[in-house]
Length: 219
Image (tube, rainbow, N blue to C red; front, side, top):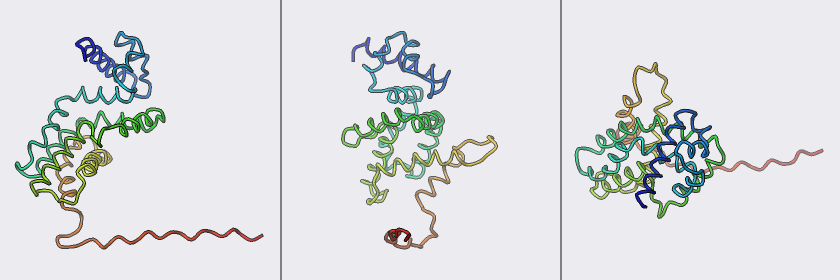
């Protein structure tokens, strides 16, 4: 990308942040964003495949230090403990979650944006995960190689489970006096140790039982 292209991309991201802050994701149109950036509306699609990609780029740009820290997480494999590393990671990401949650809700409520998101995820090369999920998955894989994480888990799936924990913690009722980060250590410990008592084993899963088809009522 040329210097001019990078400058235009930066202006679009800055404009998206400003417009979303003013009217919210649901009402942030590409026309308004382009106008705020001082470019033609079509310019957006020369830098981003769709509006949802621009929104995510704006969130990540606004939280660049956090995203950069998570990208270095694999380098921490083997240091301190897995619990301490994951706890620090989720505490840092709790601030990012406050901005991503409204975006996720907007995507879910808008069929077009939701479809754009699904297409973007499906297009990821070789299952590469964008942003924090990629960093967490790479960290877990590195810890697997060191024998500090179970060999039978899928780092990719586990990364999403960890991130979804932040969304779950946001549902805990409180008076606003404490933040989500207060609950992160116990949540991480729960994920690492499970909910069964020490020495207990889970019962084998039962095969799903299909309901018998209903017979048509006789006249």
